[in-house]
Length: 59
Image (cartoon, rainbow, N blue to C red):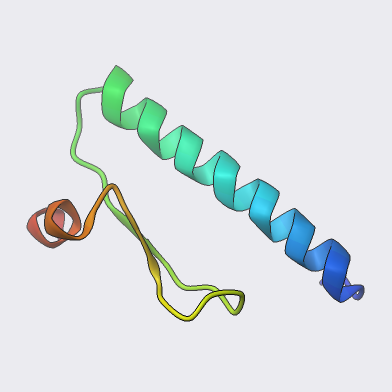
């Protein structure tokens, strides 16, 4: 675990963006259904990819 809170938050945001980019690439390139729900200590609401309706239908 990254001890420095600021460094940890920066690293999380970079990985979060990278993860969503890869999910988008899989969605387009492989023509598959993909959904992700990401809970984070840095936001009040979970992030849903691609959107709430699509995630509900996928799960």
